[in-house]
Image 1 (tube, helix red, strand yellow):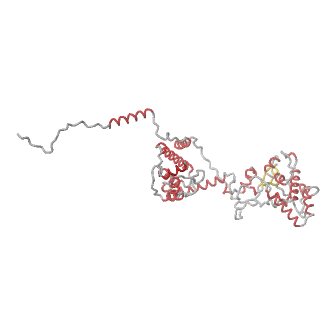
Image 2 (cartoon, one colour; image 1 turned 120 degrees about the vertical axis):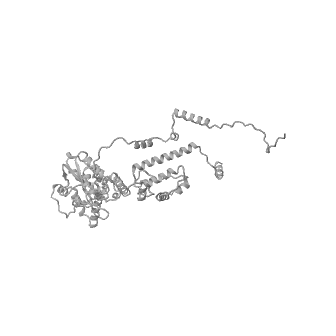
Image 3 (cartoon, helix red, strand yellow; image 1 turned 90 degrees about the vertical axis):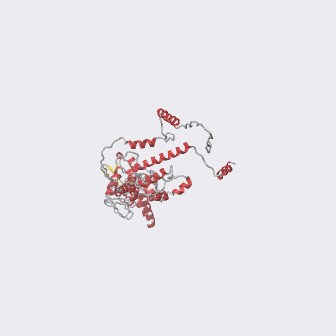
Length: 442
């Protein structure tokens, strides 16, 4: 029944009457919000500030009238924002995609002020365009620099990457996650790597341990023993080196200079699991693993009972496990190396939070010494902030009068009313007049 009445009411072409205080209060709130938005974008100084200002100015004029659009850039912006479609739908224009947190606030409009817009704003066009472009680049660079995904930026220099890996590897490297595809690894591969992990940690003295000595029971547990978190929790003093493999750009070129090319983690499996034909290293750390119950001796005994295809599958499986390790001992002539009284590890570059290496000047930011600034805001800035934190009140937007001003206004209205009160004219004596005077006969 209500739906039928509503449809009948709409067919009658009704007129909706709104109280004046509601309508003008809504308009006052709209003007207030447009003003706050303009103050916010002026503070941010986006590269398309002139475009945004013209749109907001048009919206401000539209609250009380229908302004004529003369500027071509404003006509273009309104067309891109589907101005007419929004008016037909909502009856009033709204910026639905406006985002103050983005660099240019509106994605659909022109992203940088051109010479025409800058000249209308009364700015030095060449200098202003250069500042806008530089500001946009700096904002992008700052976003990349401060991003959690790229703490050093997308293309840090080799020297900066090395120092970051040595000082705070947990910040620069992605956390280790168990690769699900390793669940299908051969049992022999998992057993050998678990034995390798146990024997390597068993070689260290108790004095350098601050936690429990790792003794994994599975392949996943053994790989977890080589994460940064596990290593720093186990050893009292540890340091990390960066690996420069796989840090080239999309063209295969490394822009920055770096040291000798390191071995990838996949090829490092041949260091820890050498072939029986490989020359035996003379360091006593390795010799104890090549004989007796060492894991390398067990690896060689296992290879003797396999054909060539099985050997290749076993070695490929070990190489894949090594490619997914977070860190490894920096083994070469010796299994364990010490650098400045700290056990040395190599971090896997597959986990670095960078895209590729860059030149030294690409990511280094020069700190500019600035003189101390005044801690008190300016009057205009404080007034704008005060407007932002004060809740809007439609009645408060009207002019507030004191009691004395109210009495004075009342007196003026009464005096004006009495002064201009219509006074009727005095009555006139009416005498009967004849249309044609007649002479009086004597």
